[in-house]
Each structure stands twice: as structure tokens, then as C-alpha cells.
Image 1 (cartoon, rainbow, N blue to C red):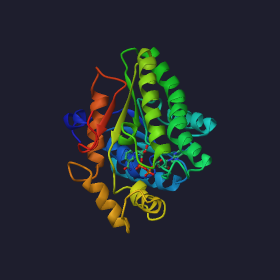
Image 2 (image 1 turned 135 degrees about the horizontal axis):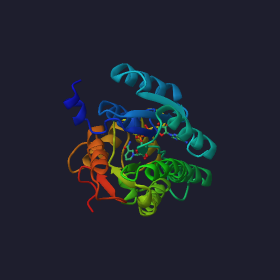
Image 3 (image 1 turned 180 degrees about the vertical axis):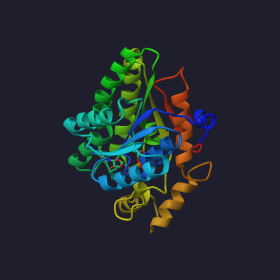
Image 4 (image 1 turned 60 degrees about the horizontal axis):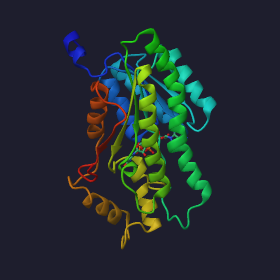
Length: 282
Ligand SMILES: NC(=O)c1ccc[n+]([C@@H]2O[C@H](COP(=O)([O-])OP(=O)(O)OC[C@H]3O[C@@H](n4cnc5c(N)ncnc54)[C@H](O)[C@@H]3O)[C@@H](O)[C@H]2O)c1
């Protein structure tokens, strides 16, 4: 690639830590960052092999040393610290952190088990706090050494962080809380040269979160009776597609547009940006 082409890449030479990158939206973000010139650490919890395979493919495509895969459970502070340490060991610094971890347990408030509610909260909300805590320390030190250097923390939130979600209180509550964290971290971390923003996608129907045949939301919502009259997974999918004014689910490209906006925009922080095909208007 010629130097002028390389200069056009949007995250050239930056180090990106993408947490929750063994599939779905995080995988898409990691691949796009690599294509746009970044070094990428892909973090997975259970499915490390899948993250390793994606890292290998990135290295094959863009050159050795461009990607690594790491294992960490975001609810375990020691593992989060280790994840940050290994990323810095591998690449020397962290310029972008994306928190693309999220789990859903749908169901009525009248039936939901406390342990399920607490697990969703721990992964979606507390895990975000732990990752920001340890990444922000590294970023703050980088800013201290070079005050002209600005960095980004980006939480992949959800339209359910902007608007309540029927029979999905644990998830929506954790996402609303995530916006509170994002706004508060944004205020505090300005002095450390860190912008903190949330992206709030609409439904990404093609990823495993929705389409996994055992655990996916289509199956969960069918079982939970969230869609009145729905008898099959296809009924549930059609119902959700019909609710999007633009008429389709969210794509990785749509999310990347918003991510590059917050990275390139120097005059904004603490925002929660909807990418919902017109489904949520603010
Ligand atoms: N898929 C959608 O329709 C949609 C819509 C809006 C927002 N989101 C949000 O986007 C983010 C990514 O979702 P996705 O669709 O890619 O889901 P996904 O299930 O495909 O990916 C979730 C990722 O989180 C990781 N993860 C789960 N628990 C973890 C833990 N304890 N420690 C470390 N990693 C853990 C998984 O390994 C996986 O890589 C989530 O925050 C989700 O809430 C998704």
C-alpha cells in the first residue's frame, strides 16, 4: 500500500483493545479497525479459540504482529488487570478501548430470578466499570507523558439504554446505567486526555446475540412470549424488522460510522449516539 493510501486509513497505527471480540459486533469492529490500520487486541471470555482464529486471519491479511487474542472475564478484576497488562506488553500502549461485551436474559419482572438479574448487571454494567478503571490508568499515564495525545473509550450500549424494553428489564437497566457511567467517566477523564462515548445500536439481527439457535434472542423472545401471537422464530424476526422505520436491522458498517465519528470528533465527549434506523429519536 502506498503511503498516501495508508495516510487515509482512519485509525492508522493506533492500538485498539476490543473487549467482547469473539463474534458479533466486537468481531466486526476488530476487523474494521485492522483494515483501517490499527493494531488490535481481541478479548474473549469463553470462546478464546474463536478470537484466536480471528486474530490469525487479521495477521494473515494485514501482516504479522497486527492482532493478538486474550482471555478475560470482565467480571473478574484480576483477569481485567492481566488483559490490560498483556495488551501493553504486546503493543506498548492503548489508544482506543471498545467495550462490546453484553448478555441478555429476557423475561418478566414477575418471574426473573435474582441470580439472572445480577449476572446481567455484573457483565453489562460492572464489567464496563472494571475495564475503564484499568484501561484509564494506562491512558492517563500516556497523556501525562504526551499531553497532545487524546484517546477514546467507547461503550457499545444499545437502543435499550435510551428507551425501556418490554420484558427485558435487566438488560435495559444495565444499559441505562452504562450511559450514566459513560457520562460520569467522560467528565472525570477529560483531564487525562480521554473521550468517553457510547454507541447505541438498534438490532443486529444477523449476529449470534439474535440468531444463535439455542441462546439467541429470537429463541428467548419466542419462549418468553414477548411477541404476541408469534409461533416461530421467523414470526419474531419479522416483528422486529417491521418496527425499524428504515426497514432493516443494524449492520456493522452503520456502527463503524458512529465509532469513527466519535474518534475523529475532537469536540465531543459523554455522548450516547443512536444507530437505530430511526427507531429511537432523541
Ligand atoms: N446484537 C444486537 O442486536 C445488539 C444491539 C444493540 C446493542 N448490542 C450490544 O452490542 C454488544 C455486543 O453484542 P453482540 O451482538 O456482538 O453479542 P455477542 O454475544 O455476539 O458478543 C458478546 C461478546 O461478549 C463477550 N462476553 C460475554 N460475557 C463476557 C464476560 N463475562 N467477559 C468477557 N467477555 C464476555 C462474548 O465472549 C462475546 O465476544 C453488547 O454490549 C450488546 O449489548 C447488541
